[in-house]
Length: 207
Image (tube, rainbow, N blue to C red):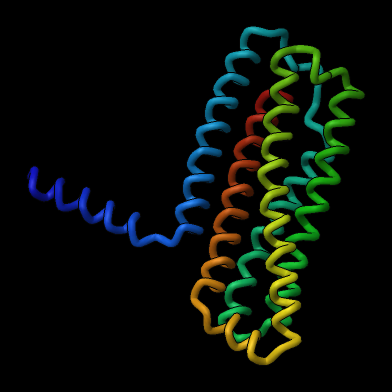
């Protein structure tokens, strides 16, 4: 049994060592982000139980709309890699652009949601639990902004490669370029899942 455990440990260490630095960076970022959100979520739950009730408040309508937008972006992002693997850079670019656009739309509705919270009496400097509403959604938006910047970088890369046949060939045959798209999709979905969890928590509190 001990030998099997040691073999499994060695196997995992080898897998980690064989990972590309980009993969290691993204996975570590997701792990650390997950810990941050877990800590803040638990703090939010405890602060909410110790403060006055949120029963008189409602979830901002903009948060509902932004959640639907981000949920839709997950389906659009699913189309990016198949288009790339079929060597259709035009569709790859379009789906990537749509994903970025939906991310920007999500951002706009998040700001509107914060305005709705403020108008309803939930201020950042008010109740501790109210501060966490802004903090959790704000930190998530910062993380998503990083993904949107990366999406823009990928769009520029594809756009520039389309102008030259050699660059196009390198882009389509280089496994690292495929990996970049895969990592973007993984991280984007991770941000989707995090927001859906946060939104569920907000629904539970602002019911």
